Length: 302
Image 1: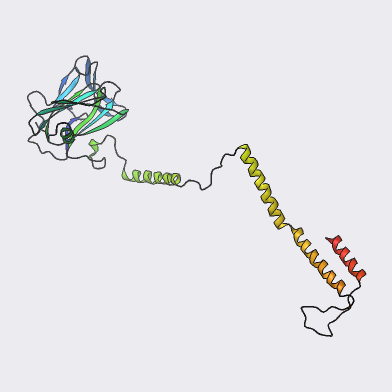
Image 2: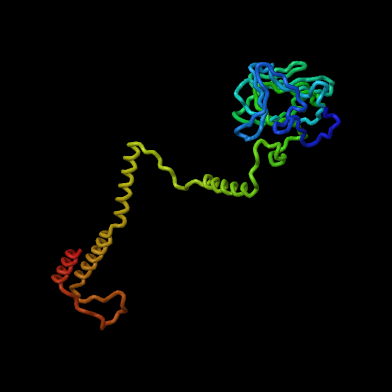
């Protein structure tokens, strides 16, 4: 079907927004429905496949009359919404041994099982819209030890909402994809810059926490010990800075001077040490009674 088409970049096989989304698909419905509706999250048209039995409600491509899709691109991407119901899909490929292999993926299986022609794999979907990407070449090599040649058939069963199914030559980031291949629209660059700057400011605040150390919980015993240490430190501090200590030292020095003066009363003269010896610089010292009065006066002033 696509074997003679140019295959590079992106190749869409289903788009819910097209005028004929099921142009190359055939539908099979029993106890269910297949219809287009507007999704409230995307505000866009999507295809809804609902059925009481997943085996009796599905879409498949290629249509009757075509044997194979003939798509050689190795990466398959499905954009779909999780309805929290049983859901499965199948992909049939051709390998270099000319063997048809099927990969069946479902959300109701818990383990992987590999047989000669069929590989069953579990699928875990997140709530809401999901983008599922498959490296078909890697799957074929791991399961069967052969090389991927092309995709032959795709079959999507109930219960799911479909937005787009496409193949690509490699995995692309959202920035590299065209707008119609993205799940959500990207913001304009100016708005994105402003939001990035705003986010970077917030991250800077979070990265640089306060330097203040958090309060450590203290038990009763620890608190008592801490209080005792503080009191000891305060006592040491006060004793070190107590102004009376300086007065006591001065008082001792004064007493020493008085004793020296008393011992020199008999000579009745004293020569100052800081002056040069000069016979003219002598003076008469007071007697012992006057010295006692000076000492008493100093003690009262203290």
